[in-house]
Length: 173
Image (cartoon, rainbow, N blue to C red; front, side):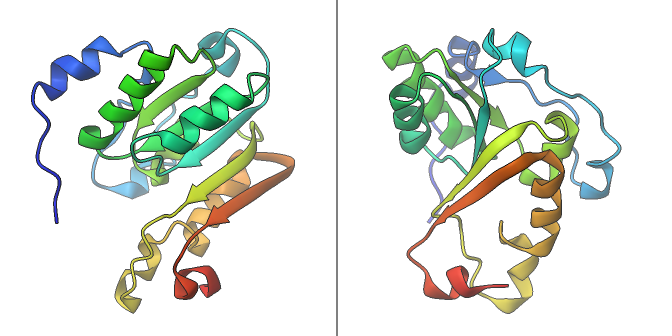
């Protein structure tokens, strides 16, 4: 079931622009993701040089906001592709006045366009959509194509933490 469009979505996103990083290079041809170059300067964005962790598919931001609050020594970058969902995450962070979290509205295919190589210390994949049909396997965030993307942006000794309640998705290779 699809979520209804939130009332005043654009104005609500503008109200929490302090937490939302603008992603401008996206089009529907993911082949252009590697060519686009709008790398973020995390020191400028977060105003510190703390390690950056990434949550892909943050949804309404519950995990990212809680993690940022309990780990003030770490910067959290949370990614969600649906504006209707990420607005709730931004509002949650703003209401709690969390200073070490930012959100990006973009597809995971575009992460190399924005995130510098070797800059992410940990990636969280929490309850990602398992895309159960075999023909949609390439859309899973654990597909080899995505793992290649993660490898580029992860620092040495970085880890990927996956949480799922779908056994087939967990065993997918």
